[in-house]
Image 1 (cartoon, helix red, strand yellow):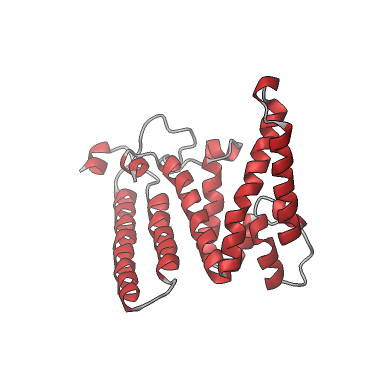
Image 2: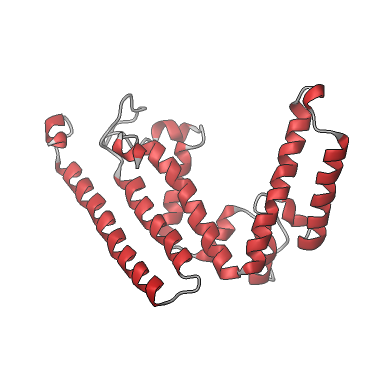
Length: 231
């Protein structure tokens, strides 16, 4: 919301990308239950092990972790491999076993985010927008030319805050907040949570409709007339 208010569409779109990942992770864990939830939490040990190995490679000798600390970390990770399988040490290894159960014919491989997207099935629209948002995160040449803050037919990096491009991250954020909240409220769903979810659905629709109206107004305004955009 801060980035939207200050006219930084690309930054807002990049932050939405993380929100979408949270919605996907949450729904996948909800569908799979307590076993995958525990696997997700246990994966913190793998991340600590990865961080420690990176630190050991680059730190000054006097700052490195002790051999005993590294032995404990290695032993913890080995125990997790025995419990969850060799693929558990991958980036999304906490989901590997659940994905294999869903598709027993799939070949063993490292899990990628796209597999989690397909599993929760939020629809193709958000998937495509997630890929678009990556251009504002990674320093590719497309990230230079593809800039939400640019007016139509202009291909350059924006040099100041802009009214353009706010629709995409705003609309996406409304939808992803709803999906993540719906996942949370659907756990132990009762009458009170159902009513809260219905109310939030209406609020979400209002927010999304507001972004649509703003974009339509912006599309009708002359590109050179800044006063028309600010009025």
